[in-house]
Length: 257
Image 1: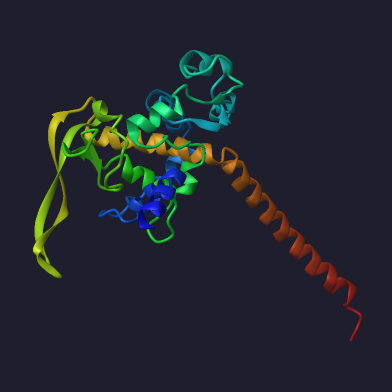
Image 2 (image 1 turned 45 degrees about the horizontal axis):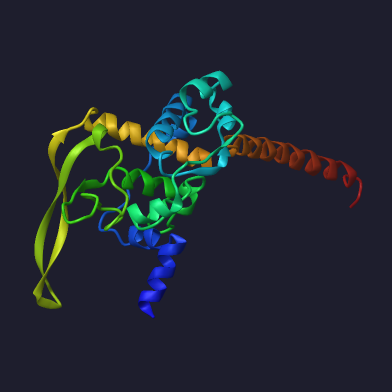
């Protein structure tokens, strides 16, 4: 029965969330100021198209919606339109689901609302998870892809951005299991050993990942900034209306004792 439940969870894409929540590291805080930085969002869109859209789709997002990021249709078509012919098409991929399942064990999930779906009230937002996840890959020769992840132990996804970050291994310490002295526990020390350098420095890579996560967060709700602005306007209007109604009420009842 447990095996059957596990298989069902895998088919629904829920095992990833469960394992991510039980990962041995705390989630890093995503720099929220990136959400108001158009240059960062444009950079994130470029990274998404070049590194994520090869396997993951974003079937609920159209290319031309990126005009809200300050891009023209010509810029979108010339620089970001690799998997479609028209800017009005959705961000789908040509990867066959059967091939994906054979290669990775499961079909890569759609990323349209991934930032919203990965939120955990106890550990942080979905953006916090993604920001941690994309910075927690390390070499692990015991895994089929040669990669593992501290935020998502046993992940099937390889480190697609390893050329930017370089190759590194996580450092673990062994401790005896207090409940079973015949077993040992591997605890992450918080340090990595760099094996090969990447194209970016550590700081530059973190900035790039923050840009990518900002785009993923934006993609989950492109109208979020406008919604916040409208909310502020409505609250200001309600404030003025409250003062006006209070003074009008006082004027109506001033002669009543």
